[in-house]
Length: 613
Ligand code: ATP
Ligand code: MG
Ligand code: MG
Image (cartoon, rainbow, N blue to C red; front, side, top):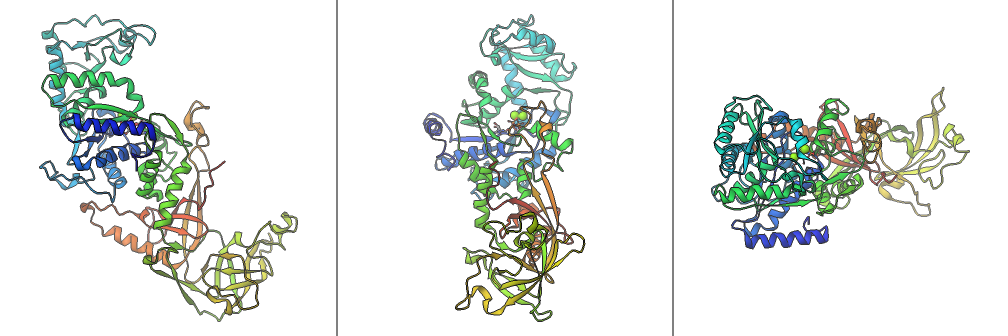
């Protein structure tokens, strides 16, 4: 599991957690605390998986994981993001057991139901307490109201090699600080006029400890609290308070917060001492997930959406949870990926191929097989009786009988994949020096091939386009005695086996093939702007793909289910739950923009790794 990998550091973390279990009053409690200022991405999935896994590992002792929206900056936050975040976390954790909430803390309102423990929490739920804690810090001489401009403050702050200087306003009386802070709260001052700062140490080697800002004025409506507040707490100040209020024992965050830990502890110690919260939480850092050939930063992802480089947050090329879901990555594949990545204290840049391998593993297990022809070449069986169609019952999954059978019709008019015929006598053969490609075992003019599950056919005649001379149709003979895999005595076994689709029962659909979204391993590293590294050819739309009837039937069934689903019941059904292995082509999932008139399939992954460059 997630806790077993990553070795040394994980062991330390486990020990840590166990030590915590003895030392702390409450059960092991973690939280996933995204800011609702964008959609979740794969990096967040790692944090979700880790926080939930730690809590589940200690479930016997009452372990739990909270869902908290860290909504302290109204400027970039939005209700749309809140909803998408909750949906994505539910989806990632789909199918896993929920925490037992039979202690009166369980949520009443249906909308909050999720895999997390109890109700959805928001840092803004604690705005009163966070404010009271600030008043306490002022009273105890640990905070003061400053009025340096942002620029002055930067200058006073010093650098890594130079100590900072104390603000001239640092020694205001407690009374004056209280009065000004109250005025800030009451809206008497405009944005930027005053800030509340902690009084710590302007000579600290840690810049975060040089009288950090705790509160700033922002006359802005908040998506949860409306106009109740015009001053908002900073992350470093509000986070330890929210953690402490909720009884979080292990506040897991990414490594860039390591230098913030002394400030986290500084705040936490003081509010515990004030009696505002019972126990002191601890911050523990782990490495960020970085993925090659993409970006994992909400700010950059927002830019891709806003500048229309992609079709939206759920564009199947996006590394967002909604993009991966729409593309057809199952949640189990994302969890497997997070487990394989493990937890460590070393940042790494991971290959997207690892996620694809996880997807192949899960999709192979869970997806029925079907025949689809992406680039159809017409085949006419000259010795087949008219419009007769013969049905073959074949397994939906080669290793899983419980998935049942599908019916694949065979008839006079068929399609095979253009690349499964090598036109030795035509322009293609000439381009290849009059030879067929080395090791080519499929259909050649005058050659034979087996149509999987059905018959061996031979190619008698190639009908060509009069202008280009490229083949447009093959006239073939079928051998009835080769039905369903039989090789008649004395005959050589036909080596090539290909997929096919019968024309009169086929459905036409569209396939979207994706490549990496960026050309550079680390977008923006060499070029100055990550947008310069966008891969202009990351989407290939293939029209006129033909699929066997079982696919059309399943797709219609899925769309009907989605139309009639009970979304109030937290039903997570989505189009991309319908996945296939289109034999010899890859794994594909139904796209959410499909309609009864047009089925669209996204290629999730190819059958084999094609990324190794
Ligand atoms: P971004 O830089 O994309 O905006 P963030 O860290 O600011 O990400 P938050 O909403 O604060 O986004 O993240 C919620 C949680 O997810 C945090 O605990 C954070 O540490 C974790 N997280 C975010 N990005 C990653 C990542 N790439 N790898 C691992 N954990 C991450
Ligand atoms: Mg953040
Ligand atoms: Mg951020």
